[in-house]
Image (cartoon, rainbow, N blue to C red; front, side, top):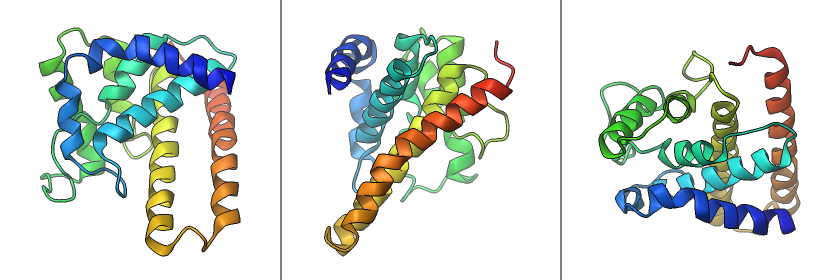
Length: 189
């Protein structure tokens, strides 16, 4: 519990450079997974990635991790309604990066890699940095959780109460394990 409080205070400080501009508020208009908006999803991913970074025994660039996570889905359209020319899952990281570079002139190479590679392995080139991989894993964790919440809300919270609690408990540990294994086997710069 104390780690979450510490994470929330750190998140508040590190996210201000993006959140205070008000540009991310545009994401509130677009649905993401289930009933969550792109804005809610981006906040969840940034907090989950920061939490994992604080928990894992590796050094991370926390500010760039949070900024990249907040902007990872900055594609600015509703993919449920507006169908891009290419499949959304493959193309939206590049649209998000284009929009982020346009609206935030100080995007670093690390933040660029976070945004561009967060859909790995759907996009075949792996993340270059630990932070990029962590955001990719946090994105999958949050998306899975949001979908399960939407399903639970649709069919009723009493249908599978033990199953949903078990999934919620096991997912962070599974992602941390996958992250540690990837760190061990991929060449990092």
